[in-house]
Length: 305
Image (cartoon, rainbow, N blue to C red):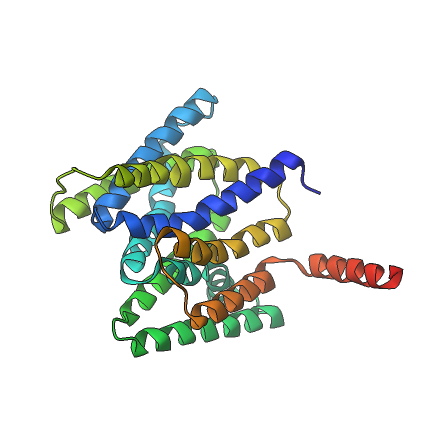
């Protein structure tokens, strides 16, 4: 059972991650994708560095740890965050969230393909559910007058990059605290994003509306700040089934909040796709014992009635 503070933290984390998708979409109305990522990730890295330095976390890597920071940062930070922001630019934010959070299924499939982890029946069903969701959204983008099917490919690339990074993290031998690893991966990724932005995008005039400054503050302090802090504090104690529920809810919240925040009304295809992706995530992340426990509880309630 989760404590009250853990339950509130998990709810806040899921809400922050889900709402971040339409926040990114609105931000791109006034700032180009690479500059947006560079600004928010720089601010987030500085905020986390200050917080964990205050908490006494070891933040200075030794020589051998820099290699892990660079190799793990490429797929986990640079690949995921760069491709995801271009996916949001091309697609409705809720749709981008649905495709981005196919990552757990890609993790299982890539693990079975390259690391001999074995593909269970549940994993195969999850892959089929994701394939159906992706196909449905791709057909919808191809059929729409202003559809951008390339955006589907970009978001899938982001999800696969995240999945590769997850597999690499599982196999890495780390001596640096995970909090410090994240701070330095963000810092190096931010530096790379600044270079890419300066090379490929026009220099912003920085005369933003008050709303835009609020959106940037959300990206820095919520998405890259408090969300990371809450996740690190919960990750060591959350059972796998609870973590899975949090991940499952993000695309649903992203799709629902996009209606209120960004004025994006989901199509019926988005509704079907989000259900398929949530079912796929549950199939690969929720342990069989958790399903048996839920079934036993349901059966006891039925018997009591």
